[in-house]
Image 1 (cartoon, helix red, strand yellow):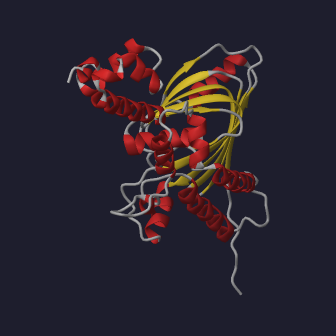
Image 2 (cartoon, rainbow, N blue to C red):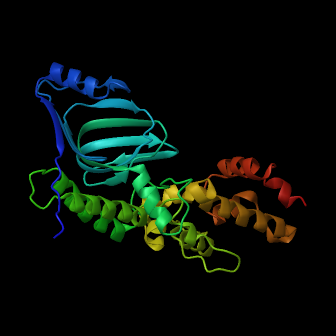
Length: 325
């Protein structure tokens, strides 16, 4: 009969309810990182609890103090987080993400992170980096270079699935007295979470099959948004409308556009409109009565001076030059 060995978790917990002690506590907690406090309320509360299962860690952080923290590059674990209260801003690796209640994110890996936290309560799961890359390799994909290209799930359905799995995993790993948490259960629970992360969060290996080859049909969220822009360049399109059409969230779409086109969705839309305006100017005949202002307004540029400035930055000369040809 196979024996399912129970494993012991190590639990580390610290807390304070005094403002000065809380500030000192947070300073110690982030001793290796540059830390700047905002104003601490008199009845401050800070608590952190980490439950360690070998290489896997489930962490809870509860804080009423506002602070900015420069986090050194994380190179051995991937940090997944659910925001429970308050707000935070994460910046690093080209990402700029505003967190609010119930947001689910993955931290940028291997780069410095600047975190601004205001009365922020969060749950975190720290999964070994090698576990995720090994799972990617088992799928026939290269281990390296690997990184997540978006900090949030790829779409609403993925986000709901990830939220349920994250909450279940964090709850069970934070309760080490559970009789079912054998070594086998812990290993497979965390491997399931790691495998799900590869499917839920856009990344450089699992999304390679979405990159179209010659003549292939493009089905990625970015391409759906691009097709929509080219079909409706004169319409007053918003980022929310693009995200809905693409079947993803606004932030995920913005991150994906930066990755694939090195610009935001609205910058891409603006470039398409500039190209259309240039075509109109080049095709204009003297008898048409076209002016730069007329063409600019036709493509959504309501300020002729601003349009001329953008045009010159893009094409190297003023739009009036096209009309003189």
